[in-house]
Length: 289
Image 1: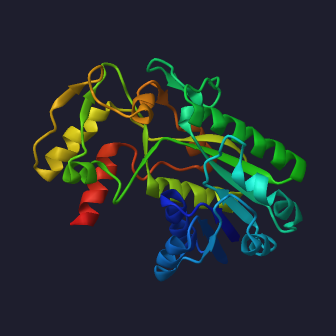
Image 2 (image 1 turned 180 degrees about the horizontal axis):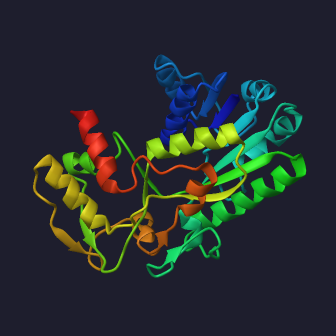
Image 3 (image 1 turned 120 degrees about the horizontal axis):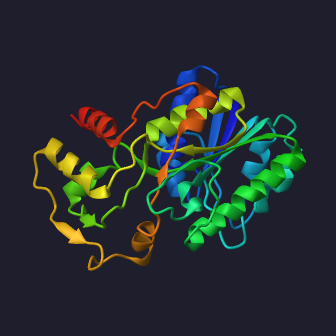
């Protein structure tokens, strides 16, 4: 596999690691927005190209010519998917291209008042970011059908992992136990994203799948559990109605649902490494020690 990652962020880097461990990988490239970030990642052994989405990149165009797999982890903007807008012709010309993976979000479903949903649920997003994701998903479906390549859309829940967990928020003082009765969220450990992406790439998996843990949980429970592991004080309760939040933060609490992951586990024949926040936090804590 010769894999191009558009957007070499947290999830993509975990997927690079998983692909390297799989033994299937020939080469990877990834894009970042700035030269500074490209230089930092290069020091860690990641080969990167600069692509900020405002114009086609000649280096990306050249790299796509020999690519077999593409993973897209760049958010769309008001004009649609950035990769298709700037590099559609290069994707068309990539004669070895077999598979595309698009990282979307469970935010495309909107609010289900805490009910369980799966991939058959209607899409009723409740903010502009998720509206744009719905449109971008369809752009990629239309492109894959026209191009004749396999497409896998992974709808990601709230991503956490080493360096991005409740432990970090407790340490830097940003952890808040905002209480909205009945509210739950799914999460997904970044290593599970990487593992699923690597296996899906190997199998050229087609379809749309949720990437979420087994146990949607009230957010305040996760902070309480993390504080217990760290042996620090649990942040005080803050009623949702009076908590100060940015419009983006408040928008997350508009969606309340329990997202099923049965389809992706059945498609790949696996269970999650971290089926709930408890296993995920335990692994992060052990790694930090």
